[in-house]
Length: 255
Image (cartoon, rainbow, N blue to C red; front, side, top):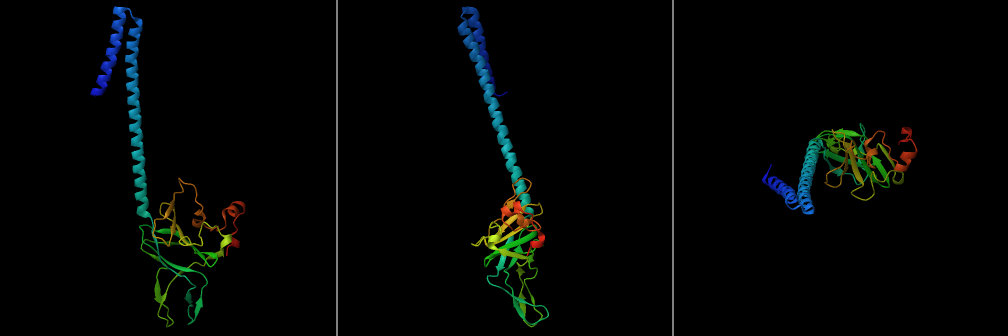
């Protein structure tokens, strides 16, 4: 018991005793009752004050614990989080060397080169791009820390063309822009080129590849599914949300 508690207790006790004495000596019941009531009220007030202080301290401890747990979780996430960096994107159709033939064909699909400079693998990476009025996307791949897609950015063509630049072609599928959920990729930069993947903890990540910013993170265990979550799933249902909700997705209809 500290000095403050002793002081309040002594004052409350003195008021109660004074009330009793006044009541005995003077027969003044009103004054005696007032003194006793004042002493009792002082005790109740002090107890309420102490209870409030204890509750505030408990709340502060709880907030500190919550903050510490959030920091621990964040450190854990950063320890396994991939960080995707766009090395290059093809602005125009890219020349593709055809195996075993000294000819060059032209792909209408866009292409990219991406590196994972983070601490963890990018699992099920899918890249979605708006290009010439359509939305293109890649087949899911996994990139280990420090690795690139494609795995080798340059190689000897083998047909006398020297070193040929390698690309990840976004040609697994494509649909007209109006047929695809606009939240997956948009016409205007930097939202025209977006990468989606999972980390080792099962969190969903969304990277706007044209800007050097941290990813948008989705925690499936505690957060509502975001509009771009279908990009993390197989089969990839690229349709607008109203069609996904009303009609089942037929894999055969995928391009």
